[in-house]
Amino acid sequence: MKRKVEVLPDQAALIERSLQLTVDKIKAAINERGLCTIALSGGSTPKPLYEAIAAQQLAWDKIHVFWGDERYVPPDHPDSNQLMARRAWLDSVNIPEANIHPIPTDEADPAVAARKYEEHLTQFFQTQAGFPALDLILLGIGDDGHTASLFPHTEALKVRDQLITVGNKDGQPRITFTAPLINNARCVMFIVAGDNKRAALAEIFAPVADDFTYPSRLIQPEGELWWLLDQAAGQDLKLKAE
Ligand code: 6PG
Image (tube, rainbow, N blue to C red):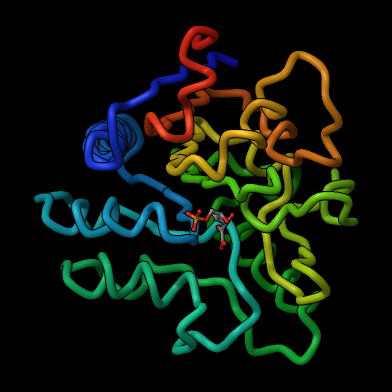
């Protein structure tokens, strides 16, 4: 694993840098393998990134979009991560609908939806055994140290043999990539803004701390790991950046 940490002066610079890296990764994947597979995060931080990606000229038909986690709501619900990404990015570019791979949320039992999405990934990536390697997984963190929908002290953190599982946000189900699926990516990029993330970041970057209390610590990918932070989030880490 190669961890790279960058603290950008403000949110605009954070989005600019994450845009540059995302576009580079998309183009490199298309050049090398003929397509790019990218998983999106929810939350408020990446919205301006998605809007900026939409303004790029990219080979949209070669980009396949997945989600690293989803709230268990219909796709037209204001909390839907899918809806946010469609409005900010996907609705305004010429990407084939077949290249958009939303997490299903229409099963009565979220565990069934998780299995369906896992099967979809297994078929798409042709990985009947083992874990697929996505080209790029975008992630955020919460001020409690969660990432994707891997929340502190939840069962989802223990899952090692599945790609997708059911997360638990204060008793509400969510569907989420598991840590081993995230860790199998070619590149993982955390994009973090705001000083409410400082305390969690200190624990996530500490040499020793509890992974079950700060789930973002579980993310130690095979490939590249980027931590892009704005100054408000990363001010305490600046000197320790590698
Ligand atoms: C989600 C996420 C989640 C998010 C963080 C950060 O669906 O909520 O994917 O992990 O990235 O909670 O959210 P903010 O960007 O709003 O701080």
